[in-house]
Amino acid sequence: MFYVARCYRYERPQAGRYREFTQLGFELLCSDPERALVRSQDIASGFLDSLGLRYEIDFCAKRGLSYYLNGQGFEVRCNELGAQQQVVGGGAYREGAGFGIGAERLLLAMAAQGVG
Image (cartoon, rainbow, N blue to C red):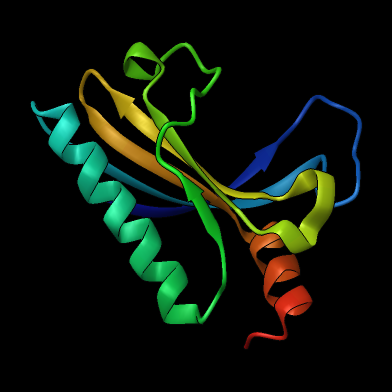
């Protein structure tokens, strides 16, 4: 399932980290979270590749969110963004796996790389 959602943060806004932001998301619900995690990582990479974005993916990222299964997660970073370089974050949970892409941060990364 793909979705687009308006989201809100409690934290103080910073460069590339807004109080209100748009998240593009993907969720794959199934009984095999390991397989769902690999598939969601492939879909995230394929989407970014289709945009021509240069990025770095960390498949071993330990996400701090408690609902990720054993902390299994991944992050996609674009170094051009400096301190707020994470563009995608995702992981596995009991019912499957998924990821979220910060739309505003994705646009900032594309602009910084001259993509699009």
